[in-house]
Image 1: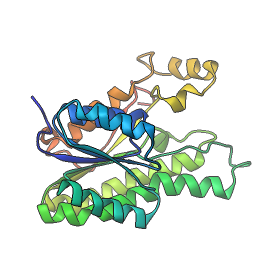
Image 2: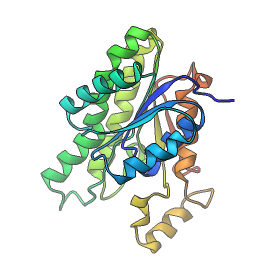
Image 3: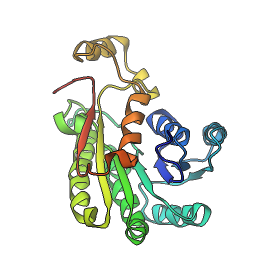
Image 4: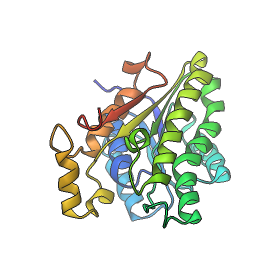
Length: 248
């Protein structure tokens, strides 16, 4: 059973990692996929080819999600190319970790703009489309760090906590138009970003997880698929952890 047959999804920050896994999962379930990243490069071309294998329409775009103007233009271009957008996954995100004592204003602003302002930009740009069609599912990528906090990540934690508050507010604003807005809060997920951590730090983190393993991008993509599909038609305004029991 293909859960997203005939739907069109936009996924930001999809050239790799969790975003790429979500794009592939959506295409596997019949969705046409538009995806964006800060650059359209070889990773973008490869993903287009991988998505096309599922017999769906797929196209990558270069767009800075932290830019309001870029986000407006992106939505307009995708509508021209795909005619509709049924699902938005706000996945674009970065880290600039440091203790507050050493954190620069530039590092604070960049993380807030890419992680949090991008969610405002894309959601505001797409709401007119979804209101007009009286249907939509918005999935925002938060983090367990946005719930629990983490030393050395005050900027990241603030951005991810802000996403949860934004998600709950938009769920209340748009729910009457049959538009749902939910958040996913991943825990320790094996990606290129976490692969850069020292092995000792990774082992310690895994010891704190009741399931004694890191999550995979597919673990997150499976929840994104559920929230994007009509299987979750009465789930709205929630922030759901994917963390193996960490901090619960």
